[in-house]
Image 1 (cartoon, rainbow, N blue to C red):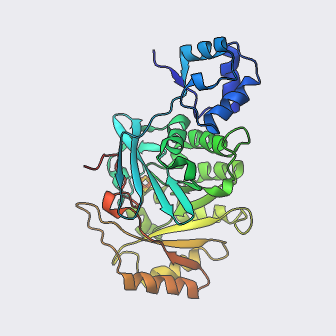
Image 2: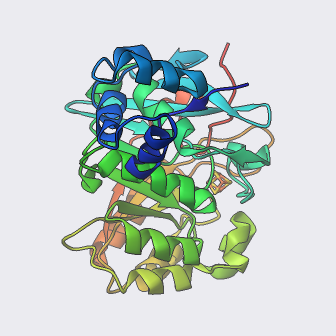
Image 3: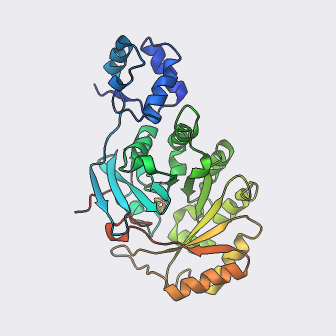
Length: 339
Ligand code: SF4
């Protein structure tokens, strides 16, 4: 019988494990410390537990750490790692070092149901939700894990489509008994499933990133089917109710495609859409996918777009692209080892 993984468990869940294994209640915190602070890889390392207690734990449980199955290193230092996923599909996590920051882009699902036209993950369909153990394992087992300063839920999958497990992983990351990170070091990126986004906003203080990609509903629906159910205008209206000036940050992601969403009329429509919302806009270069009719906007167009938004009072920057040579850049994650 396969053993149950301890990583990814909350303190409450660890208390239940202790009670089941005849360990005292306070052992739950000791186990959490070993898992999330000392980064133990086996139960035998938890020497503050009695030998008998460790033996009982070992009967049904394991730590659950698993190193990546494959890795690829970009010429710019970005590292892509392949982890076990679901339904026969692996998932990828991307480690992005940048001066004094090191960001990990984590996956929350194997594949994705959302079917965005420009995304490699969306093309492969949905193969299953990762659980919090799978998510925390990406964070603890990525090479360079101890240098991490930031986590972004921007890898494969739509985090709002797997909210319970994403919330559990955030709890492990931020709780004093867990990794004790500030929520300001965590960003969750979503296409904007409103009910789940509202829950995330109420239950956590993490930064939020919204994939907008077009301010025009009919056009956005062609690119992102979610627009037909949860229009971006309603997403922005929801966000107006929250404070993004002090407690946390709101970023709007905007991939730029030639002749589709890169002209000044779109910049003006975007500025109108976000009027009164404290946010900044990230303009992102598109990385063309095989057989796609979408093309990257030119540098000149992107600069003009950025400048127009800035003139209209919307802070906008062109985001540097990382890891393109190993298919680790935005929209390119496919869950495959690069040869
Ligand atoms: S962009 Fe995000 S939500 Fe859309 S298909 Fe890709 S992973 Fe899913």
